[in-house]
Image (cartoon, rainbow, N blue to C red; front, top):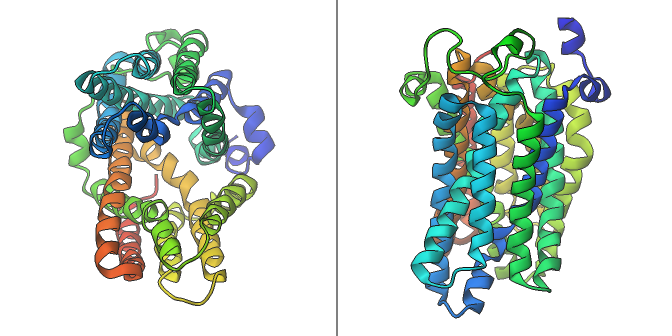
Length: 403
């Protein structure tokens, strides 16, 4: 059976998924497709009459709350069980998001926008911990790739849906986003196994907090020095990945090139990931997880380094291909790694929570750091990204261990 799990392809992985894992995969994709509030907040708030600085402060609050959400979610999942954490998170996310279109005052908006950011991310440790509990460890990387396929489709479709809805009203944008969260909560309550169902633990290994009499705490995560090295390297990788949204469009604009080029670069990445990541994961998952994760960080930094040279438009497409290759070989393993490396079930949601929190923090910090540095040194920022990619490669190589 282990050999069959090890060599399971796409179709066998899909057929072998339990209904609960299918619900999780579809729920994550649905939630991601509906998570387009942040992209429209500034437009909505400035239309309401708020200044750009006030709108920016609310968007910053949303980002900070998005960092706090998964950190808190790791503990909530451990204390109350995965299903409850997912249901409560999505219910509160739906209510908070719907409320954005109903309140007008600055402080009230700041509060509900922060709540929406936190609750929308709080479910993630529970969802991925439960997915790991219900999936044979040999198939977890492949299952993560399936989940990422749904997530990437949601990322591609969501903004288009948001743009279409915004032509009618921003209230429709917020209500649709809220509906996806509430729908996930409803299906999770009906279809996911209860964490208190101990009679089925042997078969489904449902997430619990009392399997061996010990709970879980983030202090224990901090004691895992090799894992700390990994999440520091993850932070650096997220910082340089953020430059695709932060400094790359600025550089294209400053070179006098069309914004269509930027759109084409992002579209190329999305198309290649959706088309090739899942089938290629069948082969890459048989290779060393350390190699895949470490070289993914190196390729991400290297792809940005290409943008530091003025060799013509083709450089941007070459960089996009290198970036995509790094993402394809590393992302499924990287998503599965926290679940596989956690020393016991009770710490799984904390390992995932720490991982997710650091990754989101890296994206948020990367936008600010990149734009500030670009303002002073221009395209040389991409060479710094290459250096960060090399440091992240070394960190991943030293920290990632065989699960």
